[in-house]
Length: 230
Image 1 (cartoon, one colour):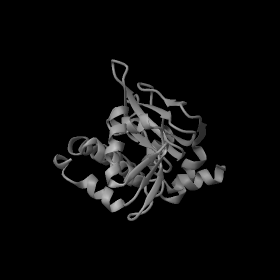
Image 2 (cartoon, rainbow, N blue to C red; image 1 turned 180 degrees about the vertical axis):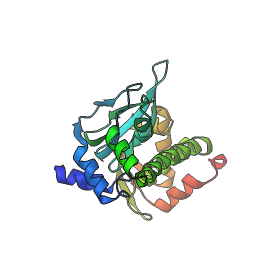
Image 3 (spheres, helix red, strand yellow; image 1 turned 90 degrees about the vertical axis):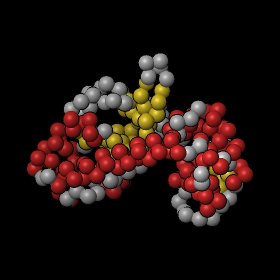
Image 4 (cartoon, rainbow, N blue to C red; image 1 turned 120 degrees about the vertical axis):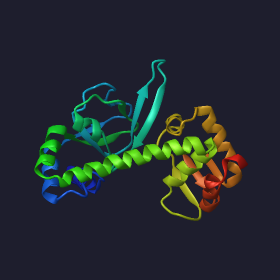
């Protein structure tokens, strides 16, 4: 992606699109632009947070390592999404690690630059709060899924969120490997395979990294139905 194309994506991100234009230009001029290969570390858990990060292309996962060495996926971000706002502005260590799930491009906004602008114009604080609230809402939604849906229902909703239409047939490409999908949905890989099998009767066919959905309304009804009936 060219640098000008990167700037266009950055301007459309939740973090920047509500800011006054003069502040956006300042952030873009002072940002650090980097490309990462698949599997490359962006930052590590307990590392000092020094920037806010905006994904311009590709996928990034945030995860924690438990004392037993197990990996717990906290969230996954893609084009136009930002992360690290809260810890960067508080100058505290990252509570998670970040890794490129695919080749990706990221814009890093140094914390001192953002803090300086926030002191000049309090309106910027509103944009930061909006981005932080979006992350919180996403985590609450994940918790609700874990408590209120079966594994197959969580997979159904995951697939529906990948579709670019609201009805009819849909074919989507799974954005990252199935082990990560399982971690993102709070499942083990073998449970994910069983969930895919349970979705066959409602018109879902998995072919390697593609999912074919025969009828989105049927799948949506399945995802929203009472789990006790499954």
